[in-house]
Image 1 (cartoon, rainbow, N blue to C red):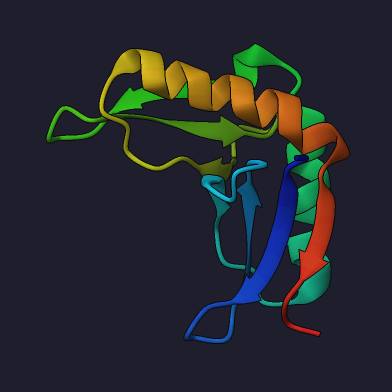
Image 2 (image 1 turned 90 degrees about the horizontal axis):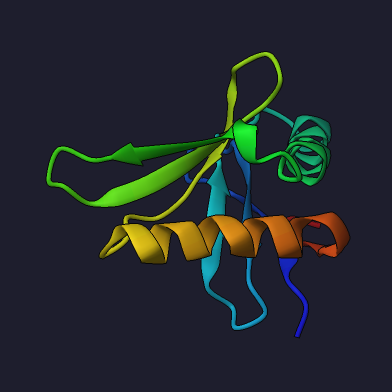
Length: 111
């Protein structure tokens, strides 16, 4: 099953997208956007920037949990992963974003 970008609204009214893997698990969550068009631009940015490994920043949270962020060419964070149980799981998450993002459908749950 293919991945998909799910567009929703936060409690504060901002738009947000989540990239979900074929199994429905969120593999990348976006920042908040004030309007739908900005959110859609964020989706396109993920499609583009996810294909270059250099755009993934592998990080470790204060509690030791590995996670990653995806950055645009201007250095701005486009999205962040969940916290993972280990480095191998985080790296699998990165590979999942790379494989799902380019062809993922968009499901707009705000319309």
